[in-house]
Figure 1 (cartoon, rainbow, N blue to C red):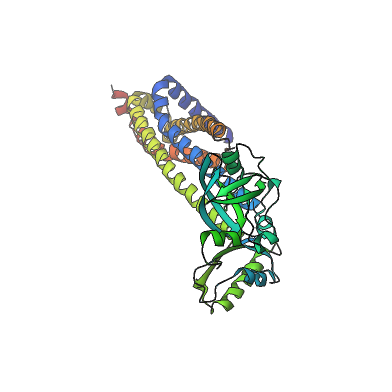
Figure 2: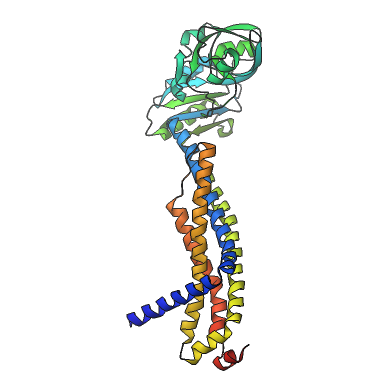
Amino acid sequence: MRGIIFFQFFQAVKMAGHAILSNKLRSFLTMLGIIIGVVSLVVLVSLVNGASASVTDEIANMGNDLLTVNISDDKGVPLKLKDLEQVESLEDISLAAPLSQTSATGEYQSTSGRVTLYGTTAAYQEIQGLELAGGRFLKTFDVENHTSVVVLGQAAAEGFFGTAQAVGEELGINGQRFLIVGILAEEESVTGDTSERLEGYIPYTTLMRMADSASEITSFSAKAADEEDPDRAEAALTEFFLERFSRDEDAFTIVSQSAMMETMGSVNNTFALLLGGIAAISLVVGGIGIMNIMLVSVTERTREIGIRKAIGASRGSIMLQFMMEALLISLIGCGIGVGLSWMIIEAVSAVADRTFQLSGGVLAVAAGSSALIGLAFGIYPADKAAKKHPIEALRHT
C-alpha cells in the first residue's frame, strides 16, 4: 500500500515538473509573485532583526546597572548637587552623576563651530563606561572649583584641531578658555551611540555658571550596586523620591536599562510582525497569480485529463497532479526568492558596514508560507480538473 502511494506521489511530482518545464517562461512569470513576496518578507524582517540586535547590543554594552532619573516636579524641594550624596548613600546605589546640556560656540584660531556641552561629575565616566583615547576625565576637584576644563569627543577634537591628539590645548567656548584634559576614545553621546556631533564634557558647576541657570538637578544617572538585580536599585530610588516629593509618582520617572531592552525588544518584534504582514500580502498576490495560471492550464489540458480518466485515473490522482504543480511552482519561487534575498542582504551588509544575516526562523516562515500559498490556491484548479467528466473532456477542442 505504501509503495502504491509513493508511486502515485512520485508520478504526480514527475508530471508536475514536466508541465512546469514545458512552459518555462509562463512558469517563471507565475513564480514572480511568490519571488517578490519571499524577497520582501526575508529581506525586511532580516534587516529589522539585524538592526534591533545591534541596538540591543549597544544598550547591553552600557551595562544592566544603569538607571536614569528625570524630575518633572520638584515640589519646592529641588535636587541639588550635594543631595546626590544622599542618593549614593542608598544601599542599592553605588554612584550617581547629574547631566545637563547646553549648546555653545567653540573657537580655535580661525576654526569655529557649535559644540554641545554636557555638564556632569567624575562619577559619570564609570556609570556610562566612557573610554578615553588620551588624558583624563573630570575630577571631583574640577566640580568643586568650577574649573574651566573639557573632555572632548574625537569628532570635536579633529574638527577644531585637525587631530585627536589635542590634550593640553586650549579651546575657546563662548569666549572663555577651556583646557582640554581628555579625549574620548570614540564620539559618545548620552544615548551611547557614535555620532559626528561636536560635543564635550565639562564640570557640572561650570556649566551652570556658563548657562547662567540654577543649580537644580532635573536629570541624573545612577549605577546599581548589584548589576544582577537592578530592580532593587530602582525600588530604592523610587522610595527615596516618593518620600521627597510627597508620594507623588508623577513628579519623577525612573528608566532602567533592563526596561529599555524589554521595550526595545517589544517594539522591534511588533515592527517585524508589521513588516512581515505587509510582505505576506505580496505572497497572497502571488498565490492568486498561481491560481489564475493553473485555471488556464486546466482548460488547456482538458483532453489530457479526459484521456487519463478514460484509462482509469482516479479523481484523487488528477487532483494530486495539479496541486503538486501549484506547490512546485510556489516552492521553486521561494527558493529563487531566498537566493535573491541572500544577495541583497550581503550587498546591504557591505554598504552599511554592518552584518545582517538570514535567520533560520525567517527562512522557515518563508518556506512554510510559500507551501501553504501554493496548496491553498492550487485546490480550486485541482478540484475543477478532477471534476471534469471524461467523455466531455475528450470532446474538448
